Picture 1: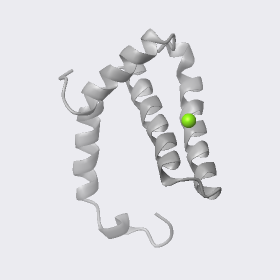
Picture 2: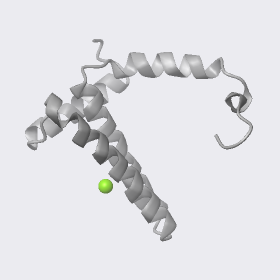
Picture 3: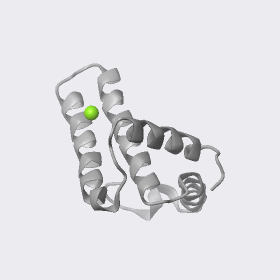
Length: 102
Ligand SMILES: [Mg+2]
């Protein structure tokens, strides 16, 4: 896996988590998914309560960190997946062809 883009951040997050005692063992995958949800909920709560946008952003960064940790635990190439998904999304129609929501 090439150490570029998101993969650099993913390796940094993995090193931090290992140093701080947060394992990336397969048995923790469900827990890691739930914790990503919890960070998004924290961001929603901050926004709802009118807290400074920096506080909302901090929770979103927590979510990114947890997502990068999970991608690492799954042994995935985050940068490759990101580039492929962005290329796919650029090819999609305006609002991805949805009528409601998005
Ligand atoms: Mg948080």
